[in-house]
Length: 160
Image (tube, rainbow, N blue to C red; front, top):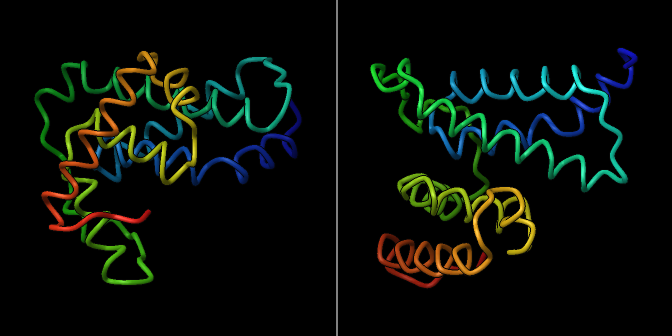
């Protein structure tokens, strides 16, 4: 692959991959490591995608898998290296956005992942199912439960 093409792919998808990894890990350093591993994997394989949506979906699926691998690793089990969300260099336009993001980040991984993919990355339930490897009914249930938890945390219904 040509360096120009690699740069183009990285520029186009790095933000989405980082946000997915950070949403899963809640740790800036781990999210950056995972992002690096995802793009190394992308550039070391000769996959040709039908369109940009398929490529983004593939990258996010690899990101979720790398996050899961990290959580299963011994290194992660013995290190507690997360940083506070306030230090994560995330900029919010309103206080409500900040409150919502912090509420989402307080959810368990399975709920945080589906909320992120559904609302922030705008994937359908079917696409989330393909990315995470879970059944569509499981994704629907997780979204329902995540919304309920967010409503409990924030004290109101959300309009995302």
